[in-house]
Amino acid sequence: MNNFAQYLSKRIFSKNVEYAATRDGFGDGLVLCGQKDERVVAICADLTESTRMEAFSKKFPERFIEVGVAEQLMVTLASGMANYGKIPFIASYAVFSPGRNLEQIRTTVALNNVPVKIIGAHAGISVGPDGATHQALEDIAIMRTMPNMIVIVPCDALEAKKATLEAAFNKKPTYIRLTREKSPIITTQNSPFMIGKAEIFVAGHDVTLIACGPLLYETLMAARDLKKEGIGAEVINCNTIKPLDEKTILDSVKKTQAVVSIEEHQIIGGLGGALSELFSQKFPVPQEYIGVHDCFGESGTPQELQKKFGLTVFDIIESAEKVLRRKTS
Amino acid sequence: MSQKNLTIKQLEKKANEIRQDIIRMLYEARSGHSAGSLDMADIFTALYFHILTHYPKRPLWAQRDRLFLSCGHIAPVRYAAMAHAGYFPRKELLTLRKLGSRLQGHPERVRLPALESTSGPLGSGLAQAAGYAYAARMDKQKFRVYCITSDGEHDEGNHWEAVLFAAKNRLSNLTLFVDRNNIQIDGYTEDVMPLEPLNKKYEAFGWHVLDIDGHNMEEIIDATNHAKAVYEKPTVIIAHTIAGRGVQYMEGEYTWHGIPPKSKDELYRALHDLRTLGGTIQSEHE
Image (cartoon, each protein chain N blue to C red):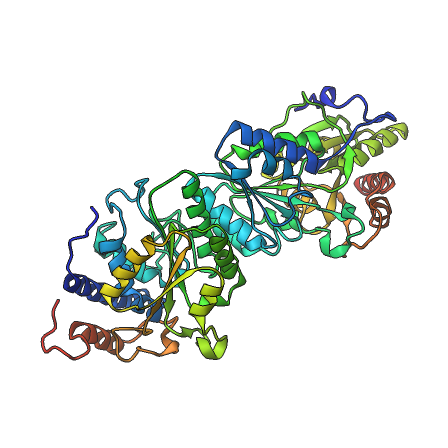
């Protein structure tokens, strides 16, 4: 969508910007899926409230299955149910699923090619005080390497809701990454959303900023600040990491010839890795990475951690300036 | 169509034919798992030729009984039973493990209809079968879900998660077989990771337990009928088997878990054993 700017929330940069967590969008979306199609079932591994499956479990108790702390069981049950003909959503924290159940996802969902919808909640360092063991920083990389798997990272609660609805009926194994913290609502109810379609939030000619997840907000703020310096940044919301919207991304990159990738994830193998693979094959350009630099997270407030791990507006601006220097040198 | 009119003697003969095909398949493929495939031939024969409600010519018939093979490495016995039952021509059995074959080294759902699922890694078949059975019961389906596991795969936690789940949900439309042949790759199960008393473990987990001779056709069939009459619990049929059953130089030996007969001598001796029922009859029947 090249003219997406019209669909952005008018309140993004105002004091009364709306906040909601992507997991809340998922929870709402799941209930709608359940209303739409009785084949939709939900399975949870002892994290019903925090993964926001609770509303579904109360509304459709006969279609909700609690398995206790057993992520391998959760996904293999889902595989059997999808095999039968149900549309199962499974949810846990992204460190555990995928993670503890990786091989079962590989064999019983991806290789079997059954339409299980895997929700990886509490992803990224913004999980906060729980610390490193609960902060997933490698899940995009892991799921990206799975054949037959769709990988979606919604930028706000509204996208998360739309992604949930679309994923339910795409007939494919699908992974959706969600975060814990409330984050700004960037899109609107009317914003078009399509799995596999990257959106150009802001048009620009000098540098392309490609982000996924709630860091789109920081990216938009960075673009606004860069504009004051006379730098035109094009902001792309890459909501689908797999399959990548190669055309939209390459069209932008051919124009700007400089890229910063932005994700709440290791700089190894995630969105940045996927983009590098694309560029090195189709159109080599200098690229800077915003992400976690090959280390584990830790306890802290989300704001403190964002700063410590280099995921702020300031870091994005710095990287944009750095890649521009690389472009011209 | 569903064949429920074979006599016990006919079923035993069929199992013997299937064992011979397993040997031929493994020899031709030059790799594969002999011990478990052979020792489960009686149960697979009983399933495909008596127990299961199914139509080989309509492998995805919606009301068929489902069979999940969790210990996917014994795929040769499943493929052989399916071929003999009419799912595909017997000569296709010799394509086992070859490039482009529908008969992959470990069974894959997308390659061959009515395999129900993909397996090989161990420990996750019962959970899939339980999920399937649960979903089927939600829709008040009448068919039964069978699952076959090996004793070795009971080392995997995923399996016991499924055992807990099936008992919690009283999945009485689910019947589990355990191939209790006492072997795994690194040795005898009771040396590697002791499982006994296995029946008491299942009872403690809330299952109905049957212990049978896994080579006795009547006991196999009786046990599955018994399982159908138990409503408040899922049933496990612990089938005591002899690894490599039917081939004297393989019987009871864990070293034959993951290898095929390699030499012509091994091939002929195996077929000879099977054709003469271990030397108990003079002439080799075909």
